[in-house]
Structures are given as structure tokens and as C-alpha cells.
Amino acid sequence: MPGAFKKHAEAIYNFKVRPDDIWVITFPRSGTTWTQELVWLLENDLDFKTAKEKPLYERFPMLEITSMVPDIAFSLIKANFMNLGNFQGLDHAVRYPSWKSIDEAPSPRFIKTHLPLSLLPPKLLSTAKVIYVARDPRDVAVSYYYLFKMVGKSLTRTTFDHFWEAFRKDLLPWTPIVAHTNEAWMQRHRSNLHFVFYEELLKDLPSEIRKICKFLHRDYSDEKLSQLADHLSFDSLRKNKTVNNNTNEKDEVQFIRKGEAGGWKSHFDSSMELQAEEFLSSRLRGLDLTYPSFSLDETEFSHL
Ligand code: A3P
Image 1 (cartoon, rainbow, N blue to C red):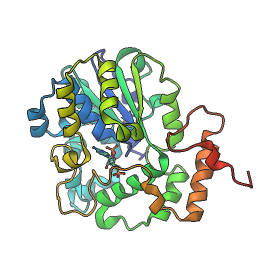
Image 2: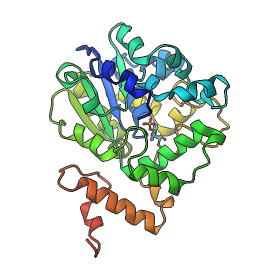
Image 3: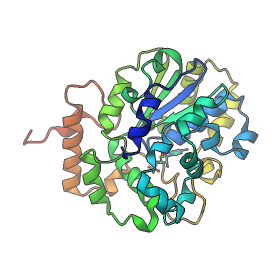
């Protein structure tokens, strides 16, 4: 994590959770935004009107966003060298800690975080409802790379193979990804935790929406749910200005980018593919966590 996290880590760990909070926890680029919009609408009687008017980052703020701004970046941000416009809401988070604003917000609160459970309040799962979304780390790596490019613009000159090197060595914010997911996976039977894979949302959104409804004790007609699924479709969310974190539609790299599973294949050459297999098999060894798109058979190559 950036050094600034140290200043906020304790306050975040001791953050006061409320029973009517709803949290969405993910490793970045795992379908957070998609799930936030889904959860917010289910909890707000499918109020599409407000959802279209009020940015998602206000309706569903991010707990640790302030800690992601390294001190050294403040002057750069002020000088506007960074494309801050791509991160609506970040300028506010610089002025007032995000966790403090959330602490002072009225109930019911909707809270997004990329922090793993071990850095969050220990009573979280015995107090509030939590939805954890996981995704194949290879697709996450590609998507994360484009996010860096989108935010950094001309400051980010790195190529994907360099980025992948940093990703697999756990040098990027919120890594290591498998341990992050495993912490939630181990708690998946808790009644306050709903665990879902991005790939499952992609495969059958209506059925996953129904499961989340059940988890949240919300009941909607089939007609309403199909309206919600339409609203949440990739094409619809990409055009949605309150959800897609882009300010400029003409930008080549968009926050809501491709929306597919397995797209990593076109970014990994054969040696990176091998590294990815080794990365996953070694990180998953001894765990009962498996990704829907990664069977351990894939890892049976001769030198193991
Ligand atoms: P890609 O970059 O692979 O396209 P997060 O919100 O956690 O940052 O996740 C962003 C990823 O979720 C992006 O992945 C984005 O395109 C994808 N995503 C967002 N909305 C989606 C939708 N409605 N359907 C499919 N994927 C979606």
C-alpha cells in the first residue's frame, strides 16, 4: 500500500461498523462497480432515477480512498499533472479522510473497500452484511494495468509485461490477490457474507441477482429484476455517467472496459502464461479455493 496508508490503517481497523451497513469488498478490477450499482439499487427500491443522477462514488463511497494518495502526489495533483478528473471524488478525499466522512454519514451506509478482511474491523462479519467479489487474477492483472494507464495517462509508460512482473511479485496496492480472496473464501459460510465470482455474474447475471436478493432479504418481481439486469448490462453501464468513472467518453481506455472472462489470453505470451500458471498453482497450493476458470489440471506440467 502507499505509505499514506500507515496514517489511516489503525482508524480503518477500528472503524465503527453498523448492523445496517452493506459492504462490497473486492480486490481492484474484480467487478466492484458492477456489484455496487446492483446492491445499491436492490436496497433502494430500484430507484433508477437517483442512480442516474447521483454518482456511485457518493452513493457508495470507498473507505480507504484517502490513503491511496501518497503525500508526494498532493503537489502533483495540485499542479494537475495527474488526470484527477478520472477519479471523481478523489479531490474531496484529499481534503477530508474518506473513512471519516463515512463514519459521520447517516445510516444506511454503503461502503466499498479493496482492503482484505484482515485489515478491516474484526467485528465486520458479525455486524454488517458483506458481499465479496473475486475474479481470475490473470484477468484482474490485465484490467488493473489498463486502470493504471487510465489514471496515470502519460505518466504511465509501463508495458503490460512489466506491470505483470510487479503484479506477480505482490508489489502493487492491495496485493497479494490470492491471499486477499482466500481470506473471504474461508469465511464464505458465514451468514453475513455473500461470496461471488465475477465470472458467475458474467455467466448468469439474473440468477446471481436472485441470490443476492435472497442474501439481502429483498423481494422483486421477475419483471423488475429483468429491468435491473438490463440496467446492469455491460453496454448500459458503460454509457452510464454516474457509474463509469470516465469523464471523457472519447478516452481510449475506459473504466468499464471489456467486461469479459479470459481476455488475459491475448496479453500473455507463452512464458508469461507459464508464469501465471506457476503463480496460481503455488499460491493456491494447500488452499481449497479454486477459481471457476482455473482448474488445477492446467498446472500439471512436466517440471512440477
Ligand atoms: P475489464 O477491465 O476486464 O473490462 P472494478 O469495478 O472492480 O474496478 O472492476 C472493473 C472491471 O469490471 C472491468 O473489467 C469492467 O469492464 C468490468 N465490468 C464493469 N461493469 C461490468 C458489466 N456490467 N459487465 C461485465 N463487466 C463489467
